[in-house]
Image (cartoon, rainbow, N blue to C red; front, side):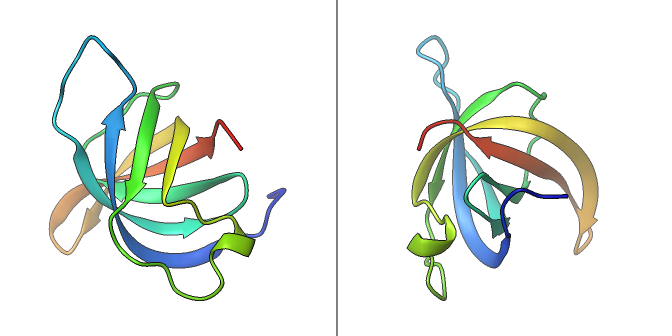
Length: 101
C-alpha cells in the first residue's frame, strides 16, 4: 500500500541525468500521477533502477497541485522502468521517488 495518495496528471516533463560528466539530451515524457513521495511517468527512454534524474515539468498541472505533492522541478531516483505500448509507440512506465524535499 502507498504511503501517500496519488493524484492524476497528464503533464509534459523533461528528464535529464544528474551528471557533470555527460551532456545528454533531455528525455521527454508525460507525468501520469504524482504524490508527496514521487511520481509515475511514461518516458521515451529506459533508465535503470537507481539512476538519478532531474525532472522538470513543462506543462501545467490542474487542481490544487502544491498541496498534493506536485513539483515543477525535482531530483528523483528511478525505482523501476517497464516498456509499454502507448498509441502504437513504445514508452517506459517509470516509477520515480523524490530525493529532496
